[in-house]
Image (tube, rainbow, N blue to C red; front, side, top):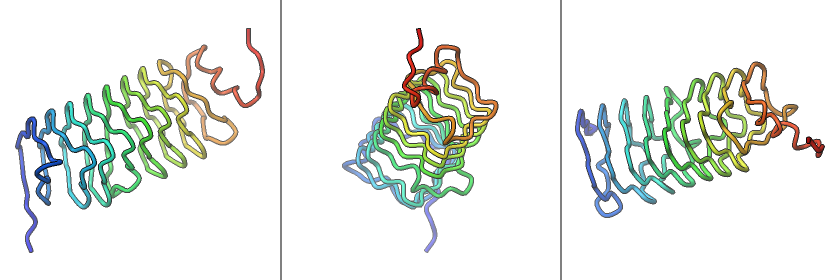
Length: 190
């Protein structure tokens, strides 16, 4: 059975909760203001695509290929990115809501998060080497056995993690943000 291939197509204001996205490969496609809420996007292939203003909250991405994908102004509440096909996984996020998203054990080197809300997201055992967190809210985000070497958190806030349980060599923090690294010691800084 041949697989459907869709290239260079713009999908705008479509509700994929009513009409499911066709199974296949999507190359260089744009999804603008589409609704994927609680959709099953498993086993699909997306290459060099962008999602702008879309709601992908609670969508399933089991074995989905996400290669060079940009999410802009999207809601991605509770998305389990850890279920994606990790081969050539490449993502970028700008002005997205990623609350409770799960990135467990993924290799996300050089991933860009800009102006994102990541409340209670899970980066346990994730490789975030050289990643950029620009102006992100990381309240109650989990970093455990995470590699954040050379990652940049200088403009982000509300993060808290244990430097003894994460690899942080050459990670960058602001003077005020570094307090989140000392939280476990329950010290008072004035």
